[in-house]
Length: 304
Image (cartoon, rainbow, N blue to C red; front, side, top):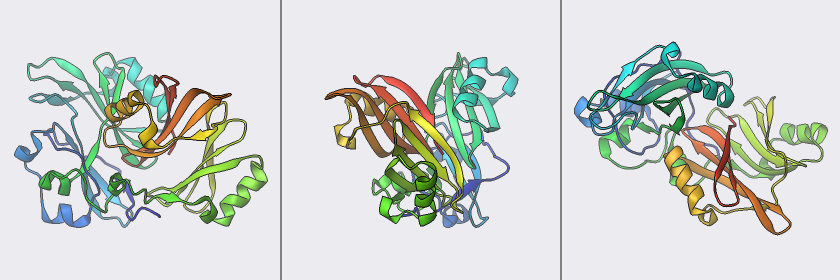
């Protein structure tokens, strides 16, 4: 089923140098219109606020959490002050991104803990944490005001409602619009369609395999957007979330806190597992992450 809420990032991003709170979920118009977050409520989670606009044009606020150490603070800086490695990472993983806000993060003693860069990517806010050398650490989790106020990990509805694990965005291959299936037949006739989802902006993301593993994106108007090769060989066996190696789930939980599992596959050579590929949604941005047979991280590809 399609997610019941869509939103796009506003042309601006308001950052409040205060703190915010734990796991969360979807944003609703009533949450920001009837309530505000105090600095006291935010102080325990070291976060920033993200001013956004939903698909109807209504303003709302989300929060990226655990941006800096407890007792520390963010300090705004220019892009030119970032380690070169940060820009290299953004270009490689978020092609076409726009920088919205940058700051270094300080410990309670005032020493540099690292950097946080908030970007606009594919119409959505993405907050990324880097260490003091510019090495990527994690995609910061975003939450909603209702969850900050209530302390609950998530609630139904809003941009993060898929965290309930019900996969409202998953679409049966047989239910794909005829325009999309016709496109595959005409342009990629050897593809086997494996998985389909509808994104918050009503666009489509399709996982398929031929001699390699691909993700193909279509707009809400069913127009072809792009085709991304994830691995140069095709998966042979789907894997349930519960059957993933502990090292894989640990990496995902640490690097993409609050992520939603989409699907996963084993890459086999004969009957031996060579690699794993896991598809997730982190704050409405989709990623494919490849791991070796022992669960060692190989690479991450930003899909949509």
